[in-house]
Amino acid sequence: MTSRGQRADQHANWVSARIDKTTDSLDRAFDEGLTGHVITGREGKSVELVDGSEAVEFVSCSYLGLEQHPALVAAAQDALLRFGAHFSSSRNRMRPMYLGQLEELLGEIYGGQPVVPFTSVSNVHLGVLPLLGNGALPGYPVAERGPLFLVEKTAHASMQVLRGVMEQIGPVRRFDLSDPDSLAGRLAEAVADGRTPIALVDGVGSMGGLVDVVRFADALRRAGGLLYVDDAHGISIDGARGAGYAYEAFEGGLPDNVMLVGSLSKAFGGAGGFVVLPSQDDVRVLRKFANPLVFGHSIMLPLLAADAAAAELHLNGEVARLQERLWANAAHFDKLTEGRLVSAGQRSPIRGAHFGTEAAAFEAARRLRTAGILVLPAFFPTVAKGTGLIRFALSATHEVAHLETAVEALGPIEHTP
Image (cartoon, rainbow, N blue to C red; front, side, top):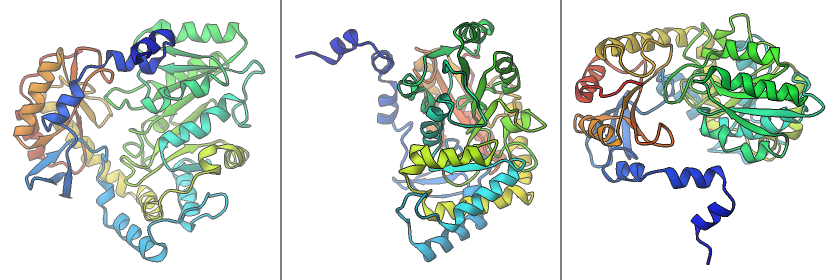
């Protein structure tokens, strides 16, 4: 019988490579109770665990605490009573009334451009990228030779996993954000081959860091290419209407060679994902051919109603007020950690304590857990092999005492990359 390892040798692929190179660190973190926490209740950032103990969490990506806002809770409750938990139908056949409301409100947030919600950001990628690469979207023309997909090596796994799908449409290459020559070489390859380069990047990195989307968009434009930005972690945290990091970076609105994808499940406070498009012609193509829309249902009704309520809070100034609290907490956390964490001083709600060994990261996670602080410990392939990172997701709803307890328990930071 052929073993998995033998199959990997015969048919090398990135999944096999990832599995073979990954240590048992995540399993050990689960076994020690350092991650995978089961919560039975919460109030603000304090959670009750299944064993009856309480802790403060820095794990949730709800950077503004909107999912507990009375307006969202009331909207979800009303929808639940009116419609039940779900309405199982393709949105092309039956559209809950909240969907149109959400689309209209998101359009206001994004300068009047059409916005199409999906059930998740992953489904946005699955529905949009094949059509984008195929040149099917009128607002994003592609060369007759087709695309050359360029995936930044730290781009979110929900894009990385679709390489096999993209390869059915055009070649896929990776490039390295930290290497100035990496993208230039890939763009030159696309131009020489007569293909349209389509670069896939994050806006705010899930483990920290900001991508200079403006610089990338300019580089892509010079090569006749398109920039596809997954700004899931950047939505709602910037801009008077909470349009997010990437959108605000362009100041005057999205350039015509940029496609913006965002999340409704993080700072936005609800559930789902969305894509911002140039025109209703592009919307019609998605509604006809994007598989998750054609064959999938809408966002669950109570959460769809909550999304619409959250969008109203983006437009009425509530989100801008919460942003101020978030950035005040981030500044205080940076001061307490002497600016030594990943993303310190940046307009990102994520901070990372990087350790040169997995063992050191485990020790820090244990200290934090003992102090009643829940964090996300990350190991390869999320970070470089042999290293570890403790991620803190900061929120507007963290109290100063929470920040101080976390920093005290974290202890000395062994390694700053």
